Image (cartoon, rainbow, N blue to C red):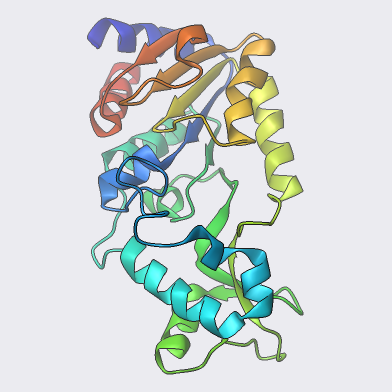
Length: 249
């Protein structure tokens, strides 16, 4: 791993811009369960259909009761950024990273100190009003659901929705366009803890390499991009990213 991290550090130093894409493998190190992995909660503990846009519209009461159960399963009381989140924030602070593009909705990159974070699937710590568009903390909505208010509503009377992309919804056009712009412009594209199987995030490394970027992968398992990557590092992200920071100091 040492020699490959040295090579990645050189590519980052010599390049004019580095972007990181993060997936579930970064969040699981903080105790947040995976959705789709071998031990993923979809299908094993929760039915994805329960969190479809149609279910939200048809049965908002039941949707919110299930959403509360999902939230309490996904977010441990002591959840906090881990060493991988902190390393990415440090890379940005030192000028070695331009942005984090994340498939995760836990908000831990921002909590760790990353300033430029593109949340492709939204942020589960917020809710948004279906009527007026106002955003507010999700925990307040969950407290109201615990007290029996289903669905929770905005002060304008509109129904609140988790500020995440539900099944049956499209990603934010603004978010994916910003992510693609970073992929086009970067010299190094670093994909961390992502299986690279879920679109449109999975297309970002291809966009980057088509535009001449150095593609580096850090993941415990092989991905569809492994054979074409300039560097494919099978490693724990909480070990590899801090080690990369050390080399770039």
